Image 1 (cartoon, helix red, strand yellow):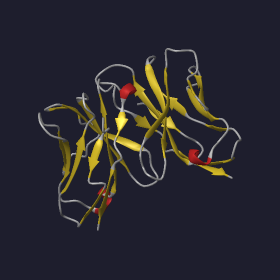
Image 2: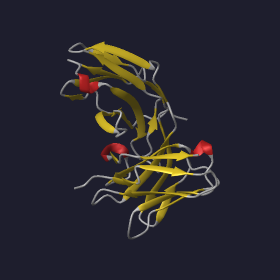
Image 3: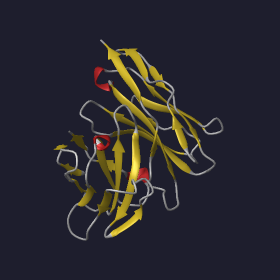
Image 4: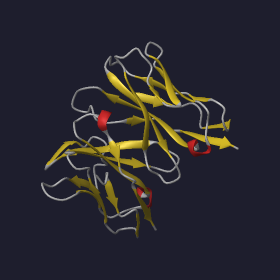
Length: 114
Length: 117
């Protein structure tokens, strides 16, 4: 089992471009969570998805950010028209059930906006 | 709203010694989970130990143990026989045990642990 795979590991975007972050959950895990870690901070919850459904997006900024977890393929976190303040590490975690007890985190994607 | 507070931004320990990292949390729930995660420079989030609130017995994983004081809403991590590989950021986290947002983790700001040879 390869674990939770996130790619790319590093992503550099110019202001105004789009960023797409991918997360492939562990085999058998149908629950995906996205977190953002700003410099010198802990992780903050963004969105919780199950296959084809957004269950809780209470931590997502209202504009420019969206997430999906299609029936086939990885979960995608999409940031449109990136700004410098979007620079952060974005982590994905997957779980076999809707609780944090069985979480496995990916290694994160570090987004740098220049 | 639930909050998690780590009051020690940085800690230092001598190799082979014992160190305790502090964590307090605020919640009105009675059923929840608590976690300690380690984040080395590689950035990988590694689960160190976890505790169910309904269990009175403190969790232990090899050199890592917790002191869970439910009434005081305190969840400290003790690392015994510290090793150089223990150097990392340590995050305390809270999650509801049930409900719609039961999987959402709330993290503290972290404690940076240095281990001196």
